[in-house]
Amino acid sequence: MFKIQTLNNISRNGLDRLPANLYSVANEVAAPDAVLVRSADMHKAPIAASVKAIARAGAGTNNIPVAEMSARGVPVFNAPGANANAVKELVVAGMLLAARNIADALGFVRGLDASGDLHHKVEAEKKRFVGTELAGKTLGVVGLGAIGVKVANAAYALGMRVIGFDPHMTVDGAWQLSAEVAKAGSLAELFAASDYLTFHVPLNDKTRGAFGTQALELVRPGVVLLNFAREGIVDAAALRKGLADGRIGRYVSDFPEADLLGDARVISLPHLGASTGEAEENCALMVVDQLRDFLEHGNVRNSVNFPETRMARTGSARICIANSNRPNMIGQLSHVLGEAGVNIAQMHNASRGELAYSLIDVDSPVPDSLVAAIAAIDGILSVRVIGN
Ligand SMILES: NC(=O)C1=CN([C@@H]2O[C@H](COP(=O)(O)OP(=O)(O)OC[C@H]3O[C@@H](n4cnc5c(N)ncnc54)[C@H](O)[C@@H]3O)[C@@H](O)[C@H]2O)C=CC1
Ligand SMILES: O=C(O)C(=O)COP(=O)(O)O
Image (cartoon, rainbow, N blue to C red; front, side, top):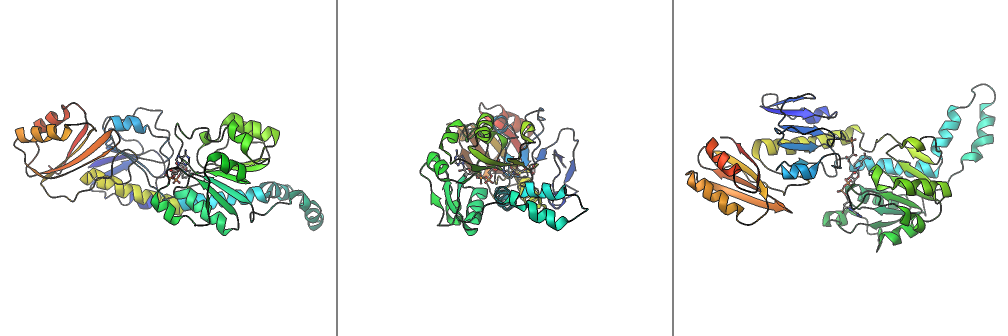
């Protein structure tokens, strides 16, 4: 029986894919085998030694101590692209909210006194909310991954000129991107050309503050800045300076900030990007399937720290080993297995950066003494036996 701890609400349809005879699922679990999470901050509390995998039902994994998990030989999974359409639609909505002054206009109508000549009040005041159209404006997209590509294509379909920047774009992403989206040679070029600017990059040490004071000098006066990625992508001081001097016309964000709540130029949503029934279900289905494949077979799909590793089952038992990616690890492993008289039926080894992962199917049961001998090899991060 595998014990799964959920740290956030996970779509029921996903959880239903965990058969009750094999899995127990709860919020509070002692010694869980795996954690299912969305945005809960896992940096704050220690992660139990029993945890063999963490599955993020979404895209961003900055709320998970991934490096620490790698050092423990624990894979972190996510659901690439599963919520991208939901975010794209909200970004389009965000551009429209800004362009047509929709939030202010709604506020005005909500505040109207229902008595008297409503028609007159509406017609007299509507000039306060005159907006602009998206068609013909230029959108700059930083990060052309699952979301960025969809946003770029949708903006082009709305008649915008679109320019993108992503030095690590995948071939799949390039196939999906409209040929009409122009490639910016640098971030500076993109900043200077954009009426609307949207970020779709993960938050990490390289992207933190990607929109900062330097960007502020380059952007067009009155630029509409959209942040549906993470709060830290836009530097706090640059944002406030840009709003104060009018360089930033509007800030549309999925991450409300306390001191900007009352600022009419700031449109904040409560981290709703992925909050559609469809996206929640897509994410949950994807990560639950990946988690099951890992827990039951050791296979790795869509991990952010482990290499893709899949092998059909053959032998009676499977040993799953994560280790530091350095010479002679396989040599030592096969030596220890040989010493224990255990024959390898088939094996698969893959590496990613500093970590390597092996699946070894063997012809006979694996004694505890062999597991201990493997764990004792210098550089072994985790070892687990399935189907003994
Ligand atoms: N508001 C919300 O509810 C949601 C927010 N997100 C955020 O959006 C981010 C992106 O999500 P996806 O598009 O699904 O991820 P993705 O991994 O498909 O795309 C990220 C892209 O950013 C690019 N990139 C990385 N560093 C870059 C840099 N320095 N400059 C330019 N490009 C860079 C990568 O090459 C990649 O193509 C997530 O990491 C998450 O933080 C994701 C889903 C929902
Ligand atoms: O997938 C992501 O990165 C998100 O930001 C979505 O977060 P959520 O699952 O809605 O808490």
